[in-house]
Image (tube, rainbow, N blue to C red):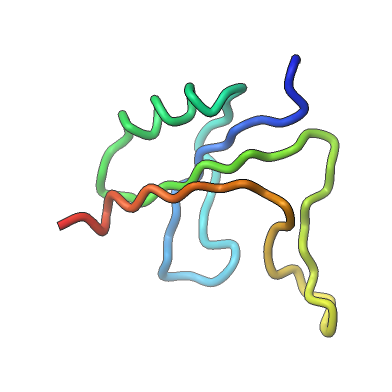
Length: 84
């Protein structure tokens, strides 16, 4: 694979705590991921994330040690469900 990362599409659900999204597909380029997002049903919100391969990107809270997010991940939001 020529890239050291992949682009994942996730369905986002703002009504829950972290993690508040789940993966539905993985692509080798941003362009392929965007094309797929544009074709998905609009009753959900989506995110695309550029995720590095062979790299742990978990972010742990410094005080309590709990997993609270992801570190150094590029992501984009698509708020279709919230459109009027």
